Length: 76
Image (cartoon, rainbow, N blue to C red; front, side, top):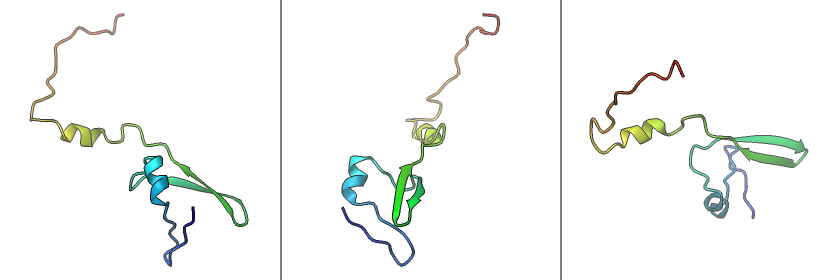
């Protein structure tokens, strides 16, 4: 597949690659220079708990999550 560098220095991943690998807007990549003219692009792992806040905000109604009473496990 072929792509080009924009006047802003940006490179677009072709749509087929984005679909195949589930690349989403905002995902971060590391660019490694192998040698002159050869580079490697590596997707960074998502941050721990990424998306948890959005998931919680999507709860169906206020109070959906309610605390439950339980015994302490500190002495086990």
